[in-house]
Image (cartoon, rainbow, N blue to C red; front, side):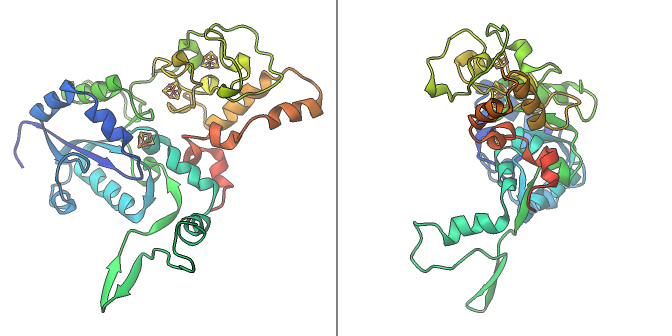
Length: 321
Ligand code: SF4
Ligand code: SF4
Ligand code: SF4
């Protein structure tokens, strides 16, 4: 296909749709992109068929923004297809970057998920034992649906990725930055995390920091929050010490603790372990029993610390497959 315009695809794997909405939220900018580029595939916004992608030459797409994790065989097939057809493949958003929220499913097993959704679900007809099968027969015909994998994968577990855009979802200026970099040919080193810095979020957060001596952890609604002091110093779990900055501390400046969606700092392998180490260092006790009581006050720590990065974590090696 001969065209001077940029050839772009946007795709969602195991995703919530928020990353696509973030692109739509760029308002006039996305209209400029639509005028300057051919959007060849974008399931949420324009019609496009997988067969059209299969018919493309390898490398025919200049850029693919892939959001969402890889949870089933369809996600994997399209990830591989778009990798082959794209000069640049970008893992867009936390789910593609690190596994994201869907990756928390790796704390359980495929069987437990299917049981909860299809067998033990009180909204189902009593006695119903139907679970989806990748292949089933009806009226002499065979019906196939994507197979549900044992675990969730981040995009670069499946295919090589050129760039990563973090965030759940990425912010407006990141969307702009990645498209402008491609248009201007001003690309960072392959493998870079685009639109983020190498510092911790705490460095950008304007909340007043002093000595952190924690005797008790609270959920945000359990205390009257000081509007200016560091949230962690107030005993509110905040992932800022273990999270890469770049978002402008948009949550903490609104009184909401950081949940870590920009992922770990460079050179940190396991974001949750880094956060645990930061948390333990601010507990104000040497007494093992008291420390245990304080740590017990951390609600669902694994769910918090690995909210966006379970498939990328060291724990991944020990979770049930
Ligand atoms: S990164 Fe966040 S907004 Fe984007 S698909 Fe995943 S859960 Fe949704
Ligand atoms: S721990 Fe959270 S609230 Fe405190 S300085 Fe860091 S980012 Fe800000
Ligand atoms: S403050 Fe934390 S959770 Fe909020 S956008 Fe920034 S990195 Fe993500």
